[in-house]
Image (cartoon, rainbow, N blue to C red; front, side, top):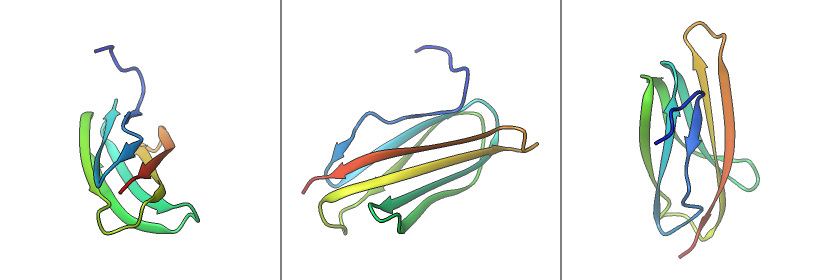
Length: 96
């Protein structure tokens, strides 16, 4: 695998039923927030809201209690010194 030079999301599975794994890489330890929203921007669930160490992480989300449709996840990472901030939003499609 290529050497990571920045924080990032590694999530290739766009269509899922009923669960998916969201993978992300942290270059430095920091506070991570990972939130699932619907197409209206309404927050459905917070999967992560805690400190995480540097390295690869995996979080499983099961959308089995939701109807088929488009959902988004937003990941935000802030370093301890608050000098580094990363945010990304990705689309997922739940197909039942």
